[in-house]
Image 1 (cartoon, rainbow, N blue to C red):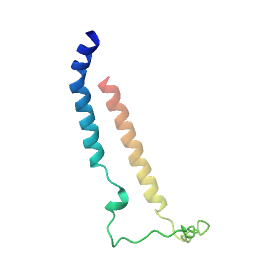
Image 2: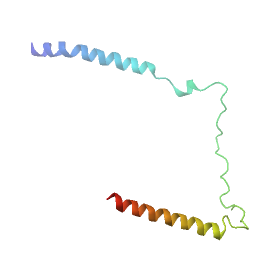
Image 3: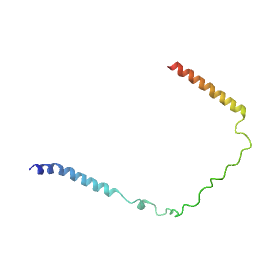
Length: 91
């Protein structure tokens, strides 16, 4: 009697799981079926590698002048000092 009672309690759960599995399985489709008909085929061979040994042309002039570099470094040092003081005041 006990086994029959357990089967009657779990039967609706098993049925619901079976129906859910079938529903989810019916929603799946092949990715190949989803590609458009006018899509280009991928080449079988990947082709050639990019030329990694080619270097960019050398620059004859500096990107920034030494005066500009010194000014930027001074501004960064001043900002660092201000943040250090603000950090000490916050503690």
